[in-house]
Image (cartoon, rainbow, N blue to C red; front, side):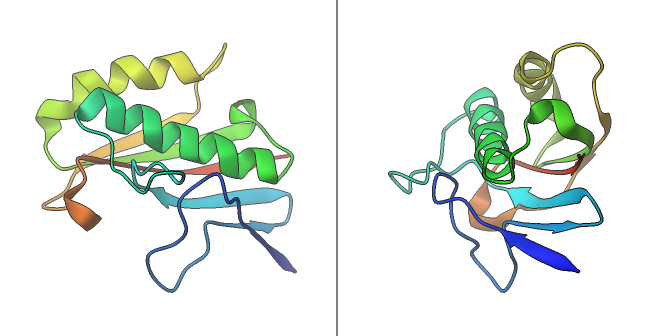
Length: 124
């Protein structure tokens, strides 16, 4: 059985998908663009975009009764690998102790011309 997780503190889906789905004690968070849900404005710069994407993930996990500590895997999508160091600097501040497993890949483009998008899997 699956359960849809939705937080108004994170931007709504821009297509036919859910912000997150919980199934079997795991929460699968869809890729989060760096958009502030309150303003609808996308952050500027790789550091700010990484921060906003991670904040959106934090809001969704909070709605599920979880925290960043529950994350076991992330995937980071970058519009250019030149943004890796800036993203990485911010990313490191969101986790205490053990870091989750992670993949980081450069892609041709991201929705809404974002530079950073991050998705994750969390476990209860």
